Image 1: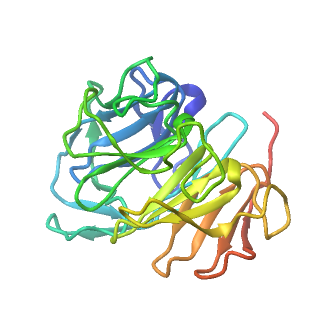
Image 2 (image 1 turned 90 degrees about the vertical axis):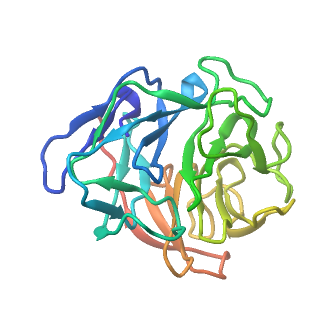
Length: 280
């Protein structure tokens, strides 16, 4: 995700250069995911919309991304990808733990896109509008979840949604934001498990919130002790990942690190990666 250059780059393992796969009509894209058909779906932040680029494949072998997650932003606003583990899978799979992220090994995405949530260049608080969306993901039933950053909420859209489709607010029930259990404050990323439990990176509350499907309140499961650089705190953060034991990994941008928070312990994290900074 090359936000500053308004494009999506594809890098094969070991390559020294990337190939642009999408660059048409994006404006500061922030998040991306693949739906269950392999279409590339992008949270197009500054156009206040989510767009889908249809996929075409030249072979039927499919790849399953097991642990791809977006990491620390660099100074040029490129989203780094720390790890993508690929394994062959069949085309008939049960609902997955997270976004299926299934793509053909030779996938190509058409530059002719469609808007699947929000209205181009028009932000708002109505259920069919978005305000600087930062991330997008899918559950195993192809419902789309949008991290509606400027509206301090998570919106769910059904499969096949368009720009006129109204989303349902599933977390963050105040468009003015806040720090209460029913509120979010500038969320930036989320992860959803096979039970449709949401893990939301609530960036300006410096915490990760677990929100059960259909519940009015969320509860802190990582950090939540304010801004800071000690391991009981996080700084400005942009991405989250859960492993199969529900341990939480946080991309802590302002502290240039990735921290791991073990399941059941939100008191303190452990450092698993330090990002060296570079001046451009």
